[in-house]
Length: 303
Image 1 (spheres, helix red, strand yellow):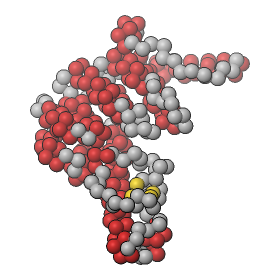
Image 2 (image 1 turned 90 degrees about the vertical axis):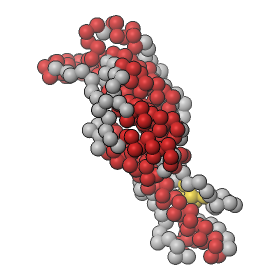
Image 3 (image 1 turned 30 degrees about the vertical axis):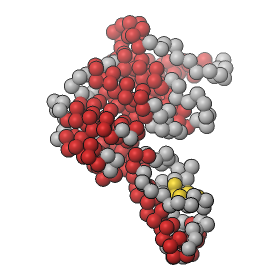
């Protein structure tokens, strides 16, 4: 799905205006340096009000607010602050989609932003689902939104029954691909099965949207990490069975010949091993964390 088509001449005019505005602001800031920003403000918080104010420029205004949404998410994602992160994400997305109710990219990409667990995002799966439901209300035949709601449940909330219901709803919608129906059945029967998760991610990798592909690529790496953690956990248990004690660290496993070297996750960060609980996890600094709990191993060694 996509939003309304933009006129190429209108886009060129907008770009020219933005360039002129940027030049003017740059000259002004050179003479009158701006004061440090001490608070973050959203001048309009009501999508309906913005829609009335923008008159016939709704589509252009939606593009502007979408750009601001991306900037806000990117800035807060890189921020070291522990509080007040991503607080404008929901209202910015509401403004964007109220101005352009058929802005598919904003709904789908925005839902990914909202659902990402900290520190990658706010972890607001409820807001992600509400945003997609808003898109579905505006475009009832958009099976993509129903599929995405199912995927939020599937990947983030671990509610596989709800995920299956939404996948089934998407499968019954006009134009939906044939693979969604079997996915609904598999999800209902197998729950958090990594094989079925890979099937879903493989479909997302074929999306024309770059951000959807990037999310799927990262999720695939997370599944690889989960597989590796299971294998490493088995290796820790094997060491215990052979020596009657648990290893103090990765060096013990390397010396015993059970590992060729200190194991690295798919992001090239060493896995963490807790010598007290004997559990293997991602390191805190790994960009792949946190891992989706719905697909985690069912068992861990006892202390």
